[in-house]
Amino acid sequence: MYGLILALLWLFSVKNRRNLPPGPFALPLIGNLPQIEKKAPFKSFLKFSETYGPVITMYLGWQRTVVLVGYDAVKEALVDQADDFTGRGPLPFLFKATNGYGLGISNGDRWRQLRRFTLTTLRDFGMGRKGMEEWIQEESKHLRDRIDTFKGKPFDPTFLLSCTTSNVICCMVFSQRFGYDDKQFLNLLGNFAEALRFNSSPMGQMYNIFPWIMERLPGYHHTVFAKVEQIREFIKIKIQEHKETLDTSSPRDFIDCFLIRMNQEKDNPATEFHYENLVSTTMNLFLAGTETTSSTIRYALSVLIKHPNIQEKMQQEIDSVIGADRCPRMEDRKSLPFTDAVIHEVQRFLDIVPFSLPHYALHDISFRGYTIPKDTVIIPFLHSVLKEEKQWATPWSFNPQHFLDQNGNFKKNPAFLPFAAGKRACVGESLARMELFIFLVSLLRHFTFSCTEGPDSINLVPEYSSFANVPRRYQIIATPR
Image (cartoon, rainbow, N blue to C red; front, side):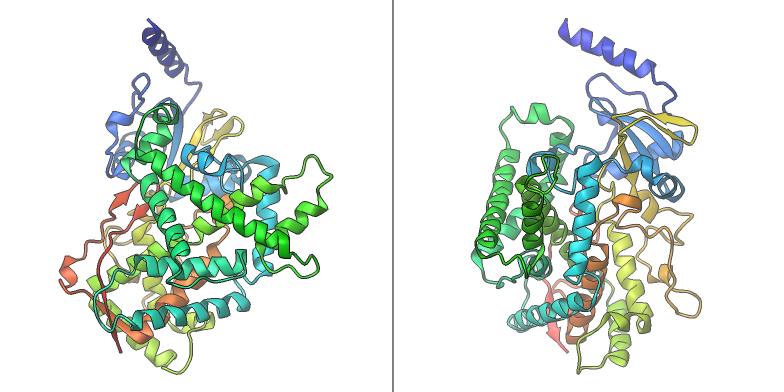
């Protein structure tokens, strides 16, 4: 009887759609889940758009969801109607991992305060500027030295690249770097990687759709949250160390600046500068600044092994501009159009967060003649932008020419949105761009990459494709040049 009542309520709610965008018929309780490919959900979303257009209503379990497909719809929402679409969806995995605090999933005044503070503070510590460039150049030397120790033998670069990119964000957040053999650091990075893999796996998808059920069932998700708690404990220890050594006249990093602001606003009952937001925002930065960038570099190496002719052409261009006597600089980018085009194409082709982080209707939204009701999850389907046929000549092939004009000069494409767009675009975009360029150019100056099984053994299709596209892992060979 209880199930029948729920089903009737569901059917009543679906019938009374109040000018919702069109979409496929949804079943009670489970919505459109049976119609979605579990290992490649992006394929199902693209298929729905062929029938229902670029603005689609779907039900992921109970949750009403509006999917925006293609560059025009995504840009119109996130840029042209930016104020309406600033809400962030309460993704259950991230909500539990952060206890509902921090920059990543916050809304309203909390989000505005934390975003403004985070952007200002990271810029003060060099993000997008010369100081950060020097940190990345220094870290690139550590990376090359470690790769040299393999002496041309096969190795898995996954954790090495995670250490490298994480150390860049650690300099900004903790004012320290960690050695590549630091066991605590390696364990932390392993926990990060496992959390991302879980969130992009079918079980992770089920947790985000039915969290109240999954919480009551045994399973690997409990192990993953235990790993997340280890990350939080590490951050808490670092915060305590900062408290004990804080010099308010000379802040060393993001944590120091946050602690100073906490003290300044300690008598303000409405302040967002408190301990829980510090812990969770630090974790947001740590995770976002580690796994997405390191995965993109790792994927780039796979692409270059798969296409040795592209790798050789990049090396020739780099040699002619930089030579062997200095580190690459961001100002070199304008003189390396082919290299820049390849890096952009790696990001487009990998499509690291195909569904973006979900947005949320904080109020009823009028969009393209439809009404998106309050409390609707909104998915800006970035995959459909980065692989849209009318935006890219060969969207399903790796093709650096997408970013080159007829004269071989670099050209921009407005549909290049791997960092999303609008007011909730990635706060670390300028840092990620700098890391990708300097690390990859530095690596190609010193090494040629291959694998024992040959280029044909490389599969560029991600291992998991959901919340994130997780590249496959390979044993690679770095031959000194």
